[in-house]
Image (cartoon, rainbow, N blue to C red; front, side, top):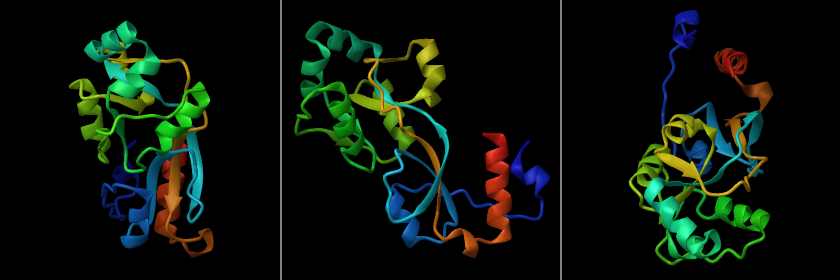
Length: 179
């Protein structure tokens, strides 16, 4: 059920943010953010885990198989989100590899643009099961079984629970019911 159908008296504005730092500089009440919950300066609640793994298109994956993953991670651009290299550094640590990206790594804060860049073969990105359609169709594939297992989608709040409005509480309850 769509939120607006069940709550016709509540206005919702969907606003994309590039990074968690944007929360403090906007009038956003609650955000849905992917990460490992590493944000120490905001309240957040994990809604569901969604581990991420290195992902590429078919042509890049063939190159990775030809030269090996460790070499590919140095030679092929690693596409990062607004957090920069945080996810990649952690993934390398879990994989037991040194983090040595090439200098021309590409930071693409917008997730839709980053997905398209991976589909277009511009590099390798950390992605999760939200790309299941692209994975199932063969447009994209995972390059490793090593995953950021503690990553997932969080609700991040700009105000402490005691200061949140009834409207925010209604929206958060709806999201929790539909996850």
